[in-house]
Length: 250
Image (cartoon, rainbow, N blue to C red):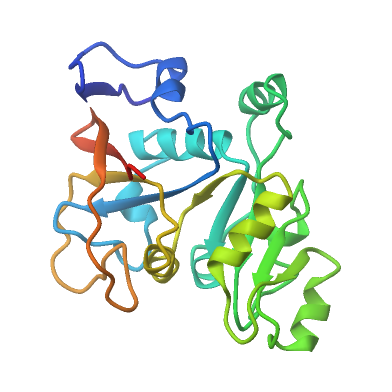
């Protein structure tokens, strides 16, 4: 397991244990939406087409925080393109993390939420077919009826918006279901859309110690949005990577 140390605030070279990391990444009391991404030093969102190349192996610092953030959230929100491209499997946690959740009155597993306007999703994909908790698919009122019917046996399909997904309305619907603390792993177009609607409260960013060169996109895509000033909450380091958490002071 990678040893993670704190650079700011209160610099400390002692390895941070899971309890301390959990405190550092804890959600605020009110409902919020957190985004988690990994990028290269030169800003690439992928290496050879996938984020996995930037993240490192299963014991990398990014993967350690990645798993922790999933443990902390009520629901994991992901765009349909990312779900397909990254080959998402069923959203599961190990026994230790399930015990942590149940001890605090949470469900054993967070709920997977997939955002899709076209509903080009495969109900047989493991993310749906093997899910320990019934996933939710967020779409809009004019989504293809046949694709919606194909998904309904494996997921709850929610329509938010008439002819496009209304993300603000979708978040309200999710929170009505008790899913207060949301984590999004992208992709870049979903991140851009969430920023455009001013729905992002927290950004967790791992900067991998790699320079990939030109070609890859950034962690945000879509229409331009006005700049927003986020506040640095903490900065950690491990194996040459930097792990930052930024928050929006509303």
